[in-house]
Image (tube, rainbow, N blue to C red):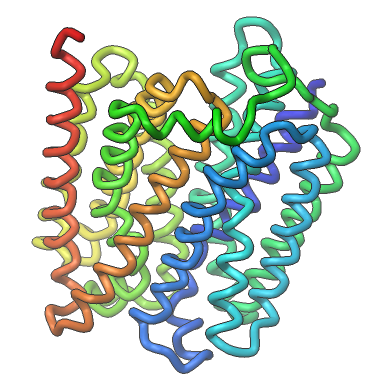
Length: 387
């Protein structure tokens, strides 16, 4: 059906906006709930933990469930979780609400891709998936900045209300327009057992693919988690500029996503190593120019472009190594990315609390990215050795 993908794309847009927008309203949350910036940053960790735990386990356990009823239930939980975040009277309640919301996110993405691919015309599977991924890009280009604007004008709680409303609209569209697809990607139908699905984690190549995704993205995610205080407290931008800079970052991310996909098609591992090296250099350069408004704005675009250019190749690597469980592979990749987000928020908080200052996050992020280059190099050498 023609409207299946747009309906699912709206859901992806709403859900990922709820994840990414935290970077723009972090200082407001910290002030309103009387917690430190590092403590507020742990809300990113909470969401990441929810996705890490809920993604693989929930996806495996629901492998036999009919797709449409499942994603409708997941969307109801998402709407309720964001409303609970908006109404949270204390930090602990908000922390718990973020975890509950995150528990269902990876499973929704995995099943949304299965439904979209199952309803795509022959030969259009890859382009169909790219449209869903573009919903995530739009959440960075439009969702996070708009959510930040809403938070600045009406308070951070209104941002979560807007996210809940977007997800509710997506739920209604899915209910009305999305068919009930029961087949797997391969068209075999019926699914597999949870144990069979989870066995994919035993493969060494899958483990390395997950490690590359987690470690390679952690550095940039550290900078993104503390994006608002970095550009305001370090560079000197006014608070109102954060939303505009997030828009710049999102445009760079969209450009980098498409460019990185083309490079990965030509030389997957070589391009991955090259792009991670450029990312490490860009983070150091960001540290060097962080006192300049103009140069920082330029580097925000560069970081978004280079940071997202590595993701298509990482996704392809995870899917190829976990081909025995394609639905679970999508949740695995999301869990690896969120593992990086959780570690990044925790490590960034420790750096700030240790007295090294916000600006030092750029250098620490570059060092973490170098670790990602090392893991990727090892995976490449292993892949080149004949079995």
